[in-house]
Length: 246
Image 1 (cartoon, rainbow, N blue to C red):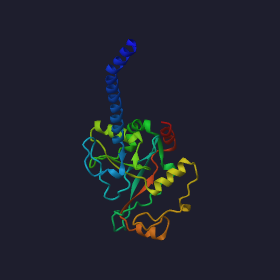
Image 2 (cartoon, helix red, strand yellow; image 1 turned 45 degrees about the vertical axis):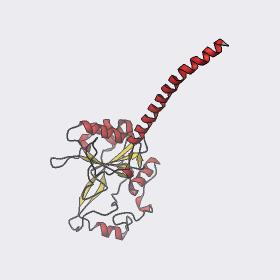
Image 3 (cartoon, rainbow, N blue to C red; image 1 turned 30 degrees about the vertical axis):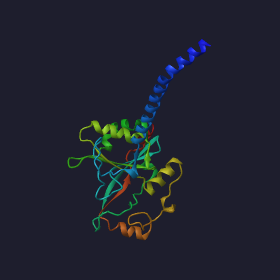
Image 4 (cartoon, rainbow, N blue to C red; image 1 turned 90 degrees about the horizontal axis):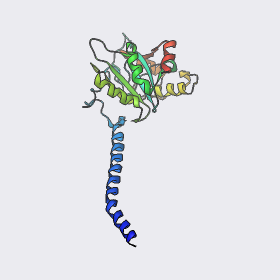
């Protein structure tokens, strides 16, 4: 009986300590969880034109094109990054700037996309600055990131944020959702299907929101723009193959 009572009183003495330690552990786990959740970039909750104190200021969209710049990175779920480049097309007969609410059709193709593992993204980025560095003496580097999901879990974006904290003349960035064209091209690339853009039932969500690609109206509206963009090949076939294997 005395042994049982002694055991009971001993338990009562150490129980508060165990509960306290357990509470601290649970609180720590909860705080880490909240910290990780707060770290996720949610496009709809971000104002990419406001300065972020922890990373270099995001780039305002190009006044000539709010959807595309020289280099675009598509964040695919959590494992891969698909990058492509565009070039400016100058139309001497154009009379308007490309300030429409919807993107123009850039004629993106699956072969334009270079796929890189998210884990290797920064290494790939640094090793290919001769191609990806779009800066010149008049302006700083800036890149566009496009995501298929509003909440970005792809680690490549956060690695990029960390990387640009420690480089001179840090590049700026802009984050947006993927365009209809990007989604379609990426879908065909991942499914290894033949891509015939003229056979795809595109919506009218291009340029002024009432233009389907490959229609007379689309051609008419685009012909009035002074400067617009088209996708271009970034790497030759050999470089592309090595990039994919990173």
